[in-house]
Image (cartoon, rainbow, N blue to C red; front, side):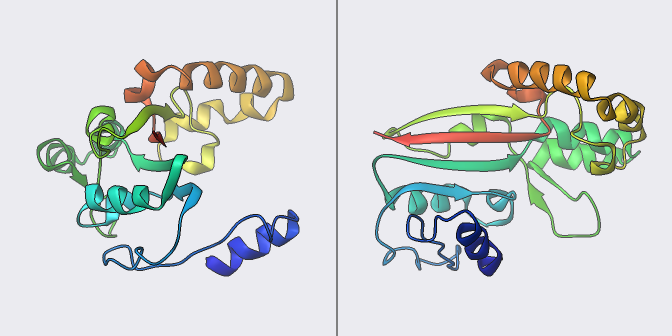
Length: 191
């Protein structure tokens, strides 16, 4: 994945403006990395580490003042909803009781509600949490939930897609709608 990211930077002409770093997130390997203006923590990384608060603090320590840490995490309410739709009531209860879910035969994934995600950061950060998507799945192939197939034809129409995207952006920008999102997006700025 690191090499894919490096090639992407190269194609965008940004190889001298960004640094791609790989590290063991479960150790203190981040201490010698220097400081950054932006740190991305994507693909539900916070859901797969043993101590997400420790990781957030370690990543935050790498930020320069005014720097931003962006993290994507799985949404607790979506995990419960998705489990209900798949007839996995036991998994929905597990998600609610221990904030952990298995969407498939893979490893357990820690899930968050907007408030528990926001609480991972200390007081030296300004944190905003939003959800996405909040109204529709981005495309029918992104889910095994057959209800999303109903919107597939509509999304293929350019004018309808543009209007739906506009509505989705407006809904996603409201912090109060985060609970409805498939995923949660935390944007934390170091003071």
